[in-house]
Amino acid sequence: MTVILPQSGAVAVDRGLLLGRLQGAAVRRPHVKALDLLFYAVFALLIGLPLALVLVQAVLPDLFDHRASSAAFSVRALAQTFASARVARSVVNSLALAATVAVTATALGGAFAFLVRRCRLPLRGAIAVVPWLVFLTPSYLKALAWALLMAPGGYLVQLGLPARVAAAFFSLPGLVFVHTLSLFPLAFFIIGSALVGLGSDMEDAGRLSGAAPFRVWMKINAPLIAPAIALSAIATFAEVLADFGMATTIARMSNFSVLTYGIYAATSDYPIDFPMAGTQAFVLILLVAIVVGADRLLRRQVAARLISGRSKPPRIYDLKRWSPFAMGFVAVITFAALVLPLGAIALRALTRTIGASLTWETFTLDNLAEVATSAGDAHAALLRSLGYASLAAVLACSLALLLALRLERDKAMRPVVLGLALGTVAIPGIVLGFGYILVWNRLPGFRDLPFPRYGEGSLLILGYVAAALPYCLVIILSAIGQLAPNLGDAARLFGVGPTARLLRLTLPLIAVSVVTALLMTFIHTIFELPMSQMLIPLDGPPAPTMILRYFNDEREGPASALSLASMVIAGGAAALIWSAARRMLFAGGATGSRRAL
Image (tube, rainbow, N blue to C red; front, side, top):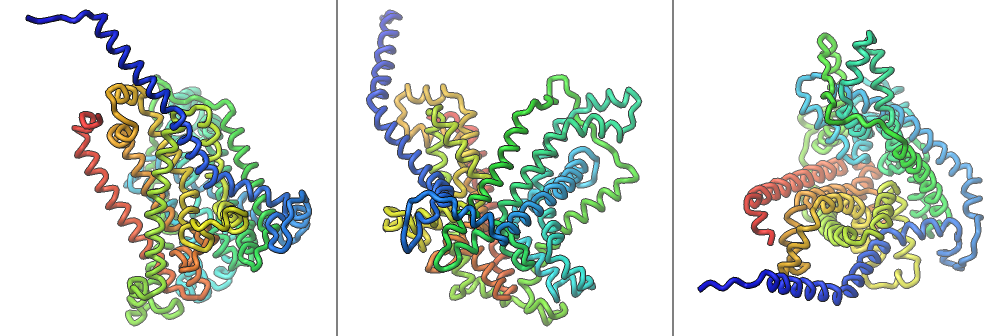
């Protein structure tokens, strides 16, 4: 006999079960709140406290004086900084360089974006990869490569470049040239996205009215993409202000002082000139804040909504007889921005000296052997960077994942933490590194902690984590924001605990974003120069610092070999990890939804 239970009884049982679980969740709420506070405290310690001390140092200049510490408010250091002719020259040089490169890089990136996104070119897909490769190459490696090319006896000078032209390179025009080739991908990404969304509706209307194509672009299309052009110029301006790679290489060789190198020089003195470093960092933060404010103001303006259900696809132009000229332009930019610098590094790594003519006798594997030999300093520096980068990537992604889960539930703290994270992205790495010196070398209570300690690798790893955490948080938080809340609610009702929900439900669904953040942090950390220079461990420097040390000691061969080995190993490891992750994700894709619970 079949017994049918009353429906009301089932509902009562379900209500009782649900109320019991909700009550259990309420009992656990203080524990959850304590975890939330812990994660927010860690985030504030990694990023908020160092940046706050940098700002405080500017108005409390004697706070970290090793002779007589004082918390007295004073604008003396700021007044001295603004009255200093050297600092004034650094500010003017930084602004002039940033403004010029903002114009040149935006123009070059916009032209490249137009050819790739709106013109029919051979190998257009392969050409679109070039800006990514240029963008991922660290600025100081590009600077070192161009120094090898343009220095007295450099490769281009050996090929017949006039010495007068090579000498003029180490000045403002040379810096503008290298910065432009280095940062045009930023304009390509921003303007290219606007060109893809710019349909042919208004363009067709203008042509039907009898306007010529050039007039259509000047009167219709150009105003529509003007916000993207302005954003590109602002972003490029901020990047040049914050750059440290060019500042410590070509700018230093050219005696062209900029703010980022001034901060590093003040912290490299013994004893450290905290007031000078702090006030210059304050000025740099102020300039970057003005730029970021202009960016935010521009984004708040009313923008044209170009994509709708009736939008026509963008018009792709057939250049016809102009196609060879366009391909020549693309080939020249690709060669100057990517092939020539990487070729110079590879060539110098495989030769005995830069001054001798290139014959078979000048080629050698000694430089690469020095990197591969376990007893060499270059080998140890490379291993340190790989180890530091691996630990920093795992720690940064793990912390970002847990923090993102908390922020997804805590809507009140989300704008605060996310705003600080996005603001940190715009803060120069040299400033964050100086903040870490203030916290872990001068701040009572922190400088005496056994872990991490100033002068040890543990603090450098912590700095790497702080530098990468905002990027990881933004990437992972955007992925978590796409998950429907009812997925977690359903798992909770079935009795799945928080750890199991994270490992078996959330993590598989956002695995692509987590792997992307992991690889980005790994590659970025291997080549992270500002933090590496500011927090050099006493037991030995990482690869970026060793590369610069070799170069400053006129040992370009080992510097190039270490650069080449770092790029090959980092790229190869990232490719292997991504390939393995893709195979695992695709293999588990068919059954992933069934395994989630």
